[in-house]
Length: 256
View 1 (cartoon, helix red, strand yellow):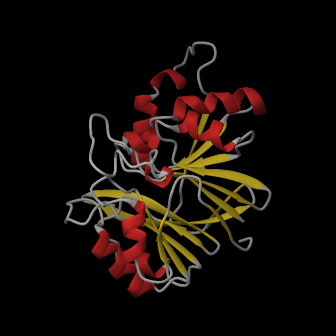
View 2: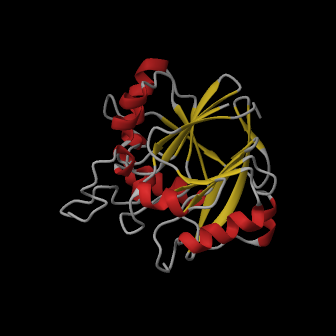
């Protein structure tokens, strides 16, 4: 299984428009962060987790020529704002794109992209097949996927576990039953927005506490804001086995 981080930034990305802080003005390419998204290649299939507003740039940069399905964590714009770009894959593959999401996210996608679901559709609009995510393990084509429900303040958000890879973004709290689904992961990805407390995101200390509790083989932090600090300074203080993810980072894991 191959996992590529297409984006590791928060909703504004890094650099932030109009900001000249040390992170936004950093010359380290690891500090340039598009909106959070990952590409998973497993069992001969290619899956995308989240389709944010940087999707076109991410697909071109990574040379993605085939996409079998999309998994959406939730309906916020930094996670769904690039769905219209999926029409390129409609043209390439000659079929609608399967999009797996919870009920609230499916409803939001229908509203945001109403023209894609109209009875009389304009030629060339994206073809989207919205699919329900069940409570337990399910298969996306041949890939086994376990959904994990976490809380983004008062909003339920989906994380996903595919074999030994577990991905959670935009979490503030995780119910105990859902935490159990993350135990034993080889790679655990968590959001770590900044150092200070935040109402709807894990901060750095909270993310580190979860890593200590869940004890994955390796942990990576994503959905990072410019308030967290530069990649280099954070890497120097993180414990062994814990790293900041960065755009373009590729991980290799056993097939699920």
